[in-house]
Length: 335
Image (tube, rainbow, N blue to C red; front, side, top):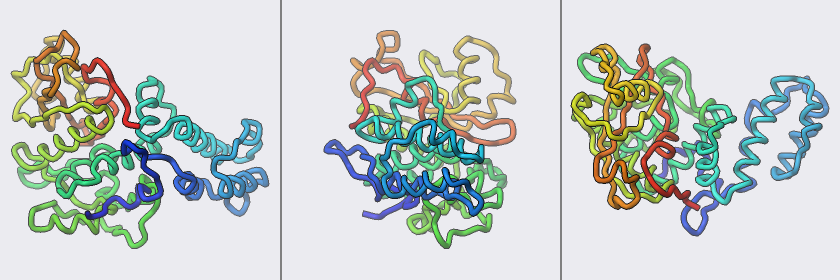
């Protein structure tokens, strides 16, 4: 089995009997060793002492008064956030259960950086046996913003931070990858170069052809199916559609803020002009293997998923919407 996404830190975690990710001291220490938390030379004694103690004992109880004693306000806020993440992880049996509790709480009070990292490592677990580079590249949409890469008549998605000219690995990944590429040259993932994905998976430097009818939307459908199965224990079939215009939206889930806005108006029977509809990158039809799990109002009718881009061609997917927005009677976390 080939490894991928090393920088998410999955090898630092244990596994529960049911396959969920269990937090370890090594995983917590990787957070405390992040550049943002390493005290600079001019750091106060409180910050230095706190950092030293937590590297020695990452589960050590830390009082609010001790955090309040950190002189630098940015450092103080960084520690508040990372300790809030630590408490979330320690309060639940698995990372999957912690993430579900977070997104169901209705109040995600962690920075997007930490939420994306949780998605990254949980999705790495859900895709552990996957050997299709197209599915893995499509899965990057779940935790890394994408941007449209202009290229003739193709709809290509490139990593937003990568094509912006900076290497994103130290920013969005738990651990930086030494020797990562920094140039913003983008190769389109093809059958002929797909094997290169394994050694480049942490560089996020492949563009994905997302033109309708290509492998891109189909690969994202497979990633979505695995995400739902892994976190909710529900089996679904997901089919990419060529158009959303004539779909009867009995129930739908917007996979980003733009898609939710469009779906709301279609559901209410409002007219959505062609300019707005052109922002829809793809849509999917979802059917459930066990209709008894679905709300009576939906029954055997299909559920639709919508993915769209913003006016400045940015794609910022919200995978939590799949966990809170599907019409499922009982939502159970993987433990």
